[in-house]
Amino acid sequence: MTEACDYFDSERWNRRKRSFVRRIPVSELLELHPEVEDPSGTRTAIAEELGFEYADRIADLTLPEIADEASECLPTADADDWFGVWRRHGTSEGYPERCERTPVADGRCALHLPPDHEDRNRSDERLLHQSLEAGHDLVGARFGELSLAYATVDRSDARPIDLRHAEFDRLDATHAEFENAVHLDGGNATSVRLADATIDATLRAPGFTVEDTLDAADLRANGRRVDLRWLTADDVVFEKAVIAGECDMTACHCGVGDWRQLRVGGRAVFDRMTVDERATVRRADFRGESVSFQRAAFGGNSDFESISVAGNASWRRVRVEGSFDCSGAEIDGDANFSKVTFTGRRSLFAETVIDGTANFGSAAFSTGPRFHAADLDEVMWVKTEADGPVDCTDATISDGTLIQPPDGATKYDFTDATLGTLTITAPDRDTGSLGCCRFYNTTFDGFPFDRHAGQTDGHVRLHEYSDRHRDGADSIPDLISTYLKAKNGAKQVGADRVASMFFLQEMRYRRREHRDNLYSSTGSTASALVGFGASWTYALTMGYGERPLRTVGFSLFVVLAYANLFFFTGISETYANSLNVSFQAFVSLLIGSPATGNGTSNELLLASEAFFGAFCIALFVFTLTRSVRR
Image 1 (cartoon, helix red, strand yellow):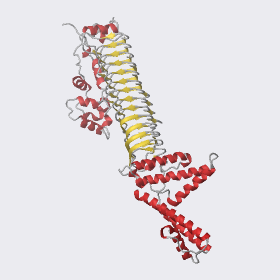
Image 2: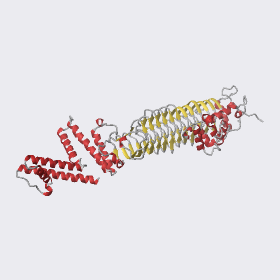
Image 3: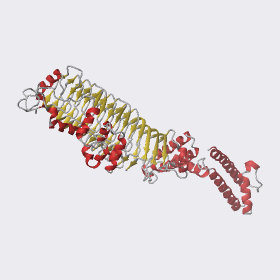
Image 4: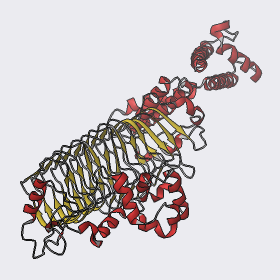
């Protein structure tokens, strides 16, 4: 019987197996074990044993992290048993029972000897190609500095290039072309270069560990899937890489991540990814049905500027310690930012376009996020918390819901924004207060003002928060425009009573504009004086056509004023008769001229009151009609 390499019977192979399975999150191992009928219930039991309130808190925990305190919740705590589960249910590729190559020293073949062994007399590249030509597996192979730059790597058959659990000092595949699928499960290397490489089939490297840099810039992966789950590296670079199919980097861990201008044709998953420092995904293009960063953790700045997503995008439960920049992003589907935590000094969504629902439910911002010129088809600000106003300057929000958190109130600045049917609701689901919002030069297109009719009585101040007064800093023409647009918006939805209040506020600021023009060095003082006087007259006599009782009050004032005038000029001998004559003169156009003494001056005085009477009656009819129509 021919002697065979004993690598798969060695303690080194056992250590490699255990090391690999200990990198896999227990939550994923539970899905594979045939004895675990209810993986969700088992996760809940483990979470309770560890003192966690929710089961998803253990999503990234591995066997060593739970074995001491929750081992009784597992069907087995033995790493060898778990590797057997992985071997049978976690991979479609079988594992060899024995190495097919002839041993050359110490019971090992050349590929399973240390790279610097004296009996390993052929180069790593030659050993690799010879094994592939012979159709041998390369599981557990050990390489030094393997250089495949500009090489074409293939097999004599359609099987994958199987480098699972292989060890590399350095793997350089720059500009290489792999015609078969490449499997690197559980391998490790000091550094890996796949820059400008082409892989025509699937790339798999779950649990791969790179001490320094994984450089896959300009990589072309033409297969249906790139599987990099649980990858660990100091730096990860996929700048300008093109992945034709799915990309799965679930629970990968790196110090710095660079995915600039990455293009993914299928579904992209970065869930539970951890980037200790800087993450750059700028101008990445995700063409699949979804891209997900759920529960990812970014220790530094995160740059998602100008990304493009053809489907849905999710950052649910993401935590960002540095600045977060999603400016210029274009998302054709929904964008889920629910329960995110942004602790950095900036959170930018400027000029972001989201055609689906943008969900910021229970999100927490350490500073006010900025949505300058964003275009949001539907937004959900449900119990969103921000230590500063949510800046929506020049944004377009077609629809949505704003519900304040139970404690405190998040402020929203809608300066120059365009608002559609945005519903503002209190935590108890009652109508929310407009006092948490600043509407300044805001255009309203279907905003439900009718729900806030009770909040617009009295002196309305849409342009400021309820706890601030900013008139001194605001432009009077802009304030006029603010309430003119608000009035038009209220009319659009049939909220005539609210429109009336906004119109009165608009006219108050027009009056203030005339007053300011009196003291201005430019313009006509006479024109400003006429405008100011006319505005005050409209306000006092009829409340700008909105207050019929003011016309009644002004009419009584005219009657009493003329009664006093008649009494002191001797037209009537008693004051009671003066009141009678004044009232008759006031309504004389209706019931005829009152009987008075002779004298042209007396007649002119009576005629003047008759003119004022007719004028006041007409004003009263006008204002009463407007109020009835409302």
